[in-house]
Image 1: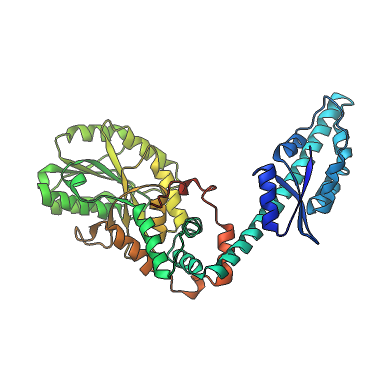
Image 2: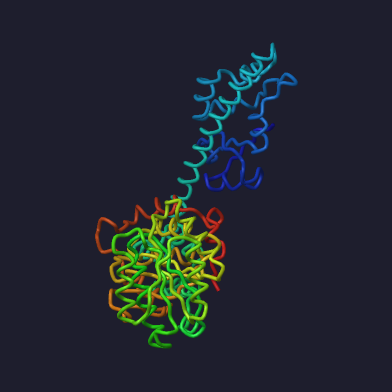
Length: 431
């Protein structure tokens, strides 16, 4: 084990020297200002790992370089909870079996607590360095700060916003930067270009999603388009919504208006029978019961649709008024063995739309339609990628309580995950 000392003109440069010499898992033991700049004491990750695994086979001699802990906040934790490091290590020597187990447990606990303290220090240092670095970027290239502020105000997540700004090429004007950002977001949206995939090819489609996202109304809109294209005899409607009072009746009313019979099923067995009886239909639309994304019955619903004996393509309805965190939970819960695509609903009610675009880009979802009202079938639209992205930036937060000041941008960026830490950003296509 070897504690290394690094001295550089700035904390950022010293931290880079640590990573170059000891790798990304290096543990920062202490840092202080010295006449030459900043001094950092660090330890390789594997060396610290060896400390956390106390050995009872042989006596471990105290290491002089462990005294580097005394110059950091971790020293207080170490000495208060474990005494002298040498005492902790010698405490692991076996006197009898019971004492050895207790000594090992005590030493491991003390070392684990010290490791937690060191990780906390390291996280604070990296956050501070990120704030400093972003502050320098703001002063050197104010256009990047303006673009970041617009992205956040449009509802895009801090991590995606940071990823876009960090990869922004050299620009001369703010408008040029915005064109680049919009082009990247547009390029990473996969949409259905025409309705032939559904209306001409047909198939079995199930609309899924949480309660209140507009599944039944969207099902009716799709049903009306199918009837307009092929007539009522080519379409069948199925509802699994037997829980909500009047839930299946709403679809039955739409079915009566369209001249299409609505079939009600309760479980996988009923669904298999219904789909087998409707095998000659060109298109079958299934309106499912809405469930909280955290409900374990979501997995049962996905299993029911996957095990129906026919290929059932699931379309996830995403409520544009939900937060990005909620939409991410919804996608993860309903994804199951895979989604055919998604439909944005309630887009007319959303104050910002960057949140739903962000989630669709991250999870590489195929976007089929957007819905912006209750009219059947008028308020269902094919996606124009450029217009959708442009709308996201036109619907910015106007309340001053939700707008970020310059000094707050550095805090947001420092806390946002880099692309290397967020696997959903690794496949973003910059062209």
